[in-house]
Length: 65
Image 1 (tube, rainbow, N blue to C red):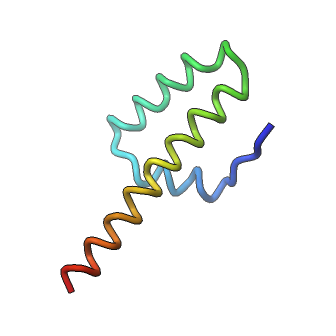
Image 2 (image 1 turned 90 degrees about the horizontal axis):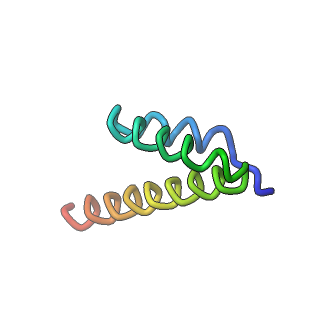
């Protein structure tokens, strides 16, 4: 089972809006009966999505300079 970094999870939590946090929690509750791997996959996919958004925002900011 893949391990997730607590710092990354904290960063994700701080970055998400209350609505996005609720959506993530609902997804985790749906994934829970399928086991820890399903929950980790959901968290990993969400982290990847938001990391990509941050990267693109950084590129966009640099292009505006």
